[in-house]
Length: 314
Ligand code: UDP
Ligand code: MG
Image (cartoon, rainbow, N blue to C red; front, side, top):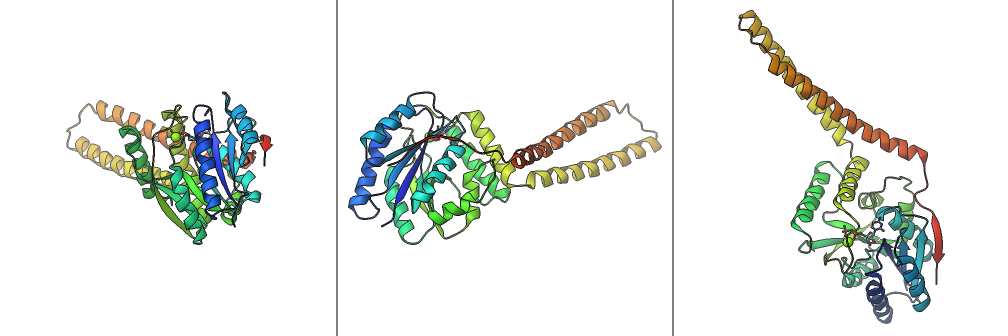
């Protein structure tokens, strides 16, 4: 029978953790009883440098429950790094790992269908939200706009899939071969390939506590996703540049004709406007290029993505 690890990144989640532990442990017990997964299956909580009592709670649950494990990172590294730290730790111990959020927004009941799909021979199972009722109007429209934009930019990304997914051991091993520092897991996993499928689930409200993804972090994340996976923005800048040059030539001809026909206007406004416009455009272009250079800079340093402080296994 297969050993499944549930990998749960947690950052300041003391309000939800007790409920999450009770729901996930009963889910595991239920699956074990049904004979679907092995008794060696575990839940691995990754404490991403929380400032509250999250780690103390994880230690306590590790003692109380036979199947709760914990991993503490040396400091806050962000959701994606915490997730990969957990998956790296689980990889040698499991046949498949499921990543999910601590706040119970990812429907725990969908795990059954993840396992079924895995047992049918899928190496990757993507959780896809069938509705976004629980999201605010703002979050819903921006998120969906983002997925569409990624498609336009040519990034292979599963629509409405976040980080609720199952990966088999060999898919995890393949993911482990990626050494990039700018992590955008939902864009990386499709690059791994293998047989995959999707499972729909209802996205719930956060059970307790506040979102750890404020607007600023969300925008950075989206921007990272685009610039880590697509070079189309650079090409778009190039096209805009060419277009502007064509327009400039047309203006030049117009000005020349106006001069010859003696119809010269002061011309101050157009001159002034175009200087500003071109200046802005150049800065914008340099900014985009700089973003890629910044990424190259980070990647060439090959900095470790995280450090493990403590590991509690069972
Ligand atoms: N998280 C993390 N490190 C961070 C921020 C968030 O490990 O720096 C975890 C958090 O505990 C949660 C998951 O990532 O389990 C998703 O975060 P959250 O629910 O706050 O994001 P939202 O659902 O609001 O987008
Ligand atoms: Mg959440």
